[in-house]
Length: 308
Image 1 (spheres, one colour):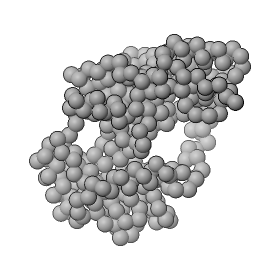
Image 2: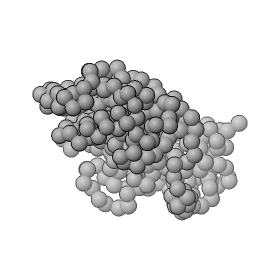
Image 3: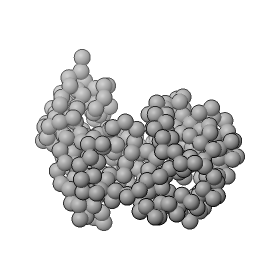
């Protein structure tokens, strides 16, 4: 049986990793697979919140909803909306995102600094707590999507955004793949700035508009005049449920939405990002060069292959 180690400080995490490496044990972070399993649930503090700078520094075990509950008291939010209620560390390690990726990007776009613990117990930090900080190597970007194989993410400095005054959703029927592609093009080319444009396939194209009440009303009217549709915010619950239960992820080129979904029975599609979440396993979307590069980076950070 693996040993589960619940760490409450960065120093404790460093000691656990250094000890495991010294004993030749394998370590997994937040999941089974290693001789030692590290839990970051105890790293659950909001360390700093600079409301004037729209930044916060949090530990990796803080969960997205709990963080946003605290930020809402100051009229701010972390614009990440992945399914469920993952920790900030999990968001970074898996580069998670949800529908708002259309406007705000993934975790990679909202992390401005990190503190990590490497496989041998070394503690390293990069970035800072202001959005334009460029000091040092950008470990935050490198660790996004690393899946816990480069080191343990202990803390993160995050870029925040103001809470919108209004949020309204237009649900547009999509009768076919061609119809969905045509209506999506119309929305993306219109003089509007949606926070999300997702295709719930088959059947519905959803567009989320956020901001001031007047601006949201105007944008909703523009898009409705182009593609029709009715207001229905409940569509996001179905999109979250399907993304959460998906088992594979397909990538497609911009402009190829119709072709991408024409052969699918079911999918949640981030239209502008070119990503479709599907209910069946698929092959790794990365090409061989990308996989080889990831393995070379891993070898530099963890030459003893402590992390699994």
